[in-house]
Image 1 (tube, rainbow, N blue to C red):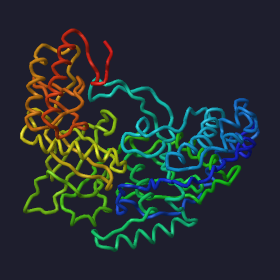
Image 2 (image 1 turned 90 degrees about the horizontal axis):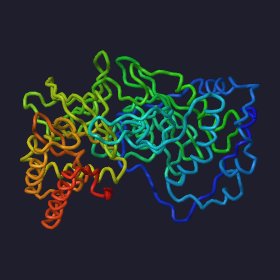
Image 3 (image 1 turned 120 degrees about the vertical axis):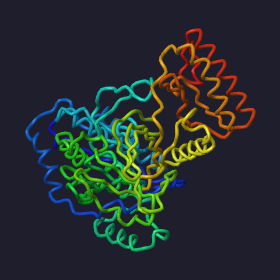
Amino acid sequence: MRLLTYIEALRPFYPGLGQDRKWNGTTRAADVQHCPGLEEWPGFWAGVHKVIRECNGKEFRTLKPPSTTKEAVRLGHSKQTQQHQPLLSAVDVSNLLDITVGRPVTDILRSAYGTDAGFEGPRSAVPIGDPNRVLCVGQMPVRQKKTNMHPITRNKPLLIIDVKPSWVLYLPPHITITFNQQRHKILTQPRGRRYQNELIRAVSQMFAHMHINNVLYGVLTTYHSTYFFKRIDAEGKYPRLLVSPLIRRIDIGESSLVAAFVGLAVLASRQGHGRVAHGTPGPFCRVLDANPGTNRQHLVVDGPIGTQPLDGDTRRVRRSRGDPRIRVRIRLVEFLSRNLASTFRGVLEVGQVPREVVFKIYDLSIPEVADVCADELKAYDALGPIQGTIVPRIWAVGTLYGIYRVIAMDPCGYPVPEPPPPEFYEAAPALFRAIHGHNVVHNDIDLRNFLVSQGQYRVIDFNSAKIGTPAQIEHEERYLLSLLQKMKKGYIYRSQNDTSG
């Protein structure tokens, strides 16, 4: 089947809206002052059409007509599929996008362009943050360097996709004018009185996901309406953000949503970006102001490789009385691991003083993740007297773009070898007696959450920790002793829920 014939035969359906719809708006908003104004994207369709027409006249046997029974079901064209339950949440919209757009895009990229790409969740596709979907190229599994955790798959992101329900976000036909006017109005207001509507919040969040992960292209869609974004970096200047014409669900052929995804994915896969690969945080410093009064300077960029002044909300930083505008700068050097938080080895600079640290970065736009982050910080606050001896010392806590919580802490050493040496069995109970002495329960006792350096052991990863009751503390003490006994017998238990062995 010819490519253009296949694209023209696609008819993404819409199942309608349910009565008990969930709001699913942008919860924790990225700060619009870090998002540049929008500019028209000249030649957007010309670039897409050029990619599509590369395959003119070619037949692709693996592209099956959507009208066949099997393909109609798989691509959402059958009557049975189109009687799908009405949309109730952003998850429903994302799943619908996967079926009616993601599957044909994947088929086309593999069959016509030899690119093994598809829609994935964020935690296997980007180092930082939680956009709804990422169109990415699969790569080899990478061992997580922070601990002896299992390898994860690191994919190469091509497009970051943020999905919003149409009943939450209205995408206007002339988004450039609307967004820029609203952005200007917000930035003229006093900082404490700024209200960002859903359009401002959604575009700002999209830019934050693109910028921190060094991804060139982004997509903001309600399924009804879609805009594509392109980030342009210029040395010594703040990035520009271009936006495509509006693409509607009912558009077909070379001007359809599927064609746009294919064209941009092919262009992104063929392009290198800057000095590092797509999906790798850039090599420049990111700056958090300790003094919120300097926030208006955030759009200034200086330095030969770009120093980004970012937002405030910085804690645990000793401010200089003589210099109220001291800046806290972070440099992300090496990716270590990814779960609820992203972990990096890097450098923290307070003023001109650098310090090697480990960064944990949480995406606060996900309420459940924000709650975990808050609990971890409460635990570290309670453990303040033993920071630097039993648990890592926290050097700074701040935010990037208004939505990424950054925790800078001591690098405490290396994973405990398997099986653990004899001294580990003596050190572990003493460590937890000290932790429990401050009424904190860890809730995730696991060999991977111990580190060692020069014979000194530390306990890390308090993202499951809580301020505990005496009964909870006693239960965790019993569990630790039981775990250590089993480990002495040759069993390495990976988690409290593991019942193997």
